[in-house]
Amino acid sequence: FIIRIFLGFFKLEIFGYGFLELRELWKFFPKISFFFEEEQNLSKRGTIINEWEKLNRISNRRLNAQTMCTPLKMQWSIDRITIVGTLRENIYYHTPHDVLILDFEQLMRLNEGNGYLKAVGNNGWQLLDQHEENIAYIEILKFQEGKGRIDFNPNKISQFLAGSMKNFIHDLFLEPHFSRADIACDIIDVPDDFITQYRVVDPVSFKPIYGRSGKLETAYWGSRASERQIRMYNKKLEQERKRKVVPKEIDTWWRLELQLRRGKATDWHAMVHESLDSFASPHYLPEDVKVTDRMMITALITEHSYWGQIHRNSKYKYRELLKQESQNDELTNHLRETFSESADDLKRELDTWLQGLDVTEVGAE
Image (cartoon, rainbow, N blue to C red; front, side, top):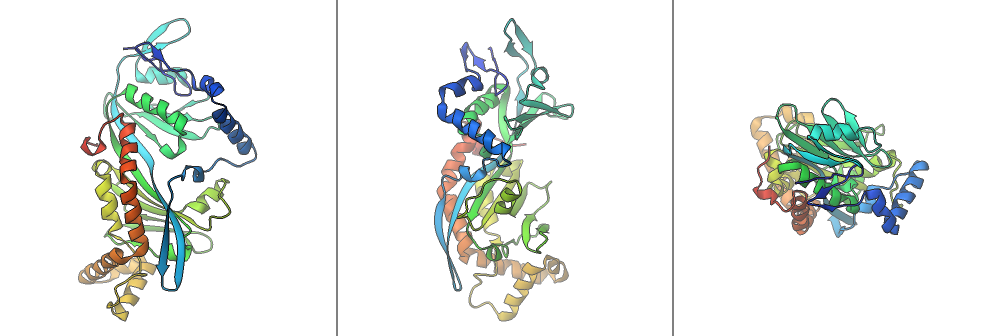
């Protein structure tokens, strides 16, 4: 079993069938060469090709709330993946004059400092593109002998490079499985004042981050150590701060992101539905809800600390009212519908990163 590995920095050959170095392949693909040349030119001017380019399966919807009738766009995607597996012990690495038998760490050390691979600490490496943007993080696990992990954002990997990355994962890891999967939905052109009133009403921690203007920019529900953390943030603002291109016709751009770890990563489909059942606002409360209850709900959404000052029975009452609202909420229902429409594509994408394994049947750590 011979592997000659190259992922931007090394070659991959299995049973004598080899891949050309990516830089050699670009010569045969003028469009790809043009893309990277243009990206480099933009980068020199302080502008980087942006994530808007990846939004190619946008679903158009319309939002009706009170006197507002707003067209909006949505797209679901896989935002980050962590794969864990047992590292192959023997890797046959071809040099121009010899064949070396290496383990994973030796292979990484051999390729450090070549412009694509950068050491991080004693047991980790960053995989970089030609602009030194982080593509992936690769690590030998300290407390799990013989195991490693790779963490990356598939949205930042070009379709051309993705095939090599998948082969890289498949040929270096035995029994790979997901330990984290982030499922995200980009929400385009919903007014800021409208979407910032949404909350996850489960009894979890809530951390809002406000800008200098006093407006909400990012909200976290759940802790970083938990199996599920939800984040909603102003994606347009983030892109602009990174000096990336946002089309002028985009008024607002928010992202709702579910960070799922360990067992929740495997059960991602059910976790999205469960989370959306708790994604609520005061916009679509049932008509029979009393004015005093509406006022209380508005206060709880505006000031999260009030939840800690009311009786347990009141907490249960208002959470149930908001979960009822979630079933009537137009924005949340659009999220449900578009997720159902995208679920097969998302599952197919996740499966291909494990070379055909069914992620719903693979255990996660």
